[in-house]
Length: 270
Image (cartoon, rainbow, N blue to C red; front, side, top):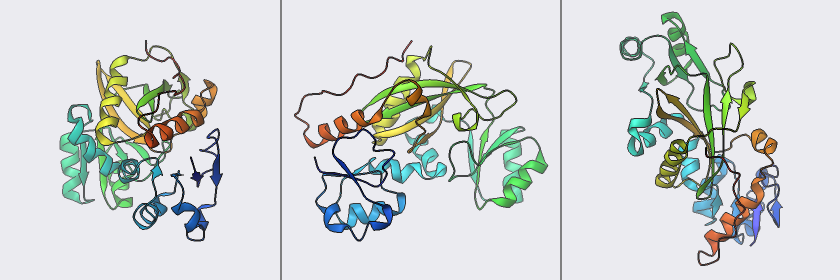
């Protein structure tokens, strides 16, 4: 396969890939037009690649269309798994909206900036003063019910399968469980029900590269979000290298009649 990537780090281990700098998109049009796959374009590049050059991109388009904004993502979740979405309000930053949020969600509640990741832009709002301060900074309010959890589950989906999953325990006294913010990783006792939920959501939405974050409250699973470009630190600790999985998925997509020789996923289910 003729593979071109705009992200050298995320393409590590993918055989035969050629890297070009994102800013050279228009300079390298001939190369891109003849590529079988273009890997890890930046969001601003996707429309030009797909609609202008007719390129096949990885990750797939749904990940870019939904993954860049938590509001768009949540609306998609409402269509495919509404029972597994925390109570969420998407409102204009008005006084009427604040009153509605207080009535429906109560305190504490969680405020999230729609276009942020790695635990950034997520705030625990304990009272009216905190809610007003959050609303003053935002063009749109994205507010969720507070879930009483001390850990969440990251499920890594690549191609058409789960390849890993692990718990993320928040540092003591921290509201965030993200590894990037000090979360502790645990690979044991991952429930199959969570993996099955991710499989259903990812398949319905047409995702082929995503790190899903889930929470369990009183035995019920909630999907919080997915990250198109998820962190690899935990996977590296487990000895999981994504390059082989990516290459095999692209090969299978290019030749659906070929045998399934994909790497064996790391054993995760309890």
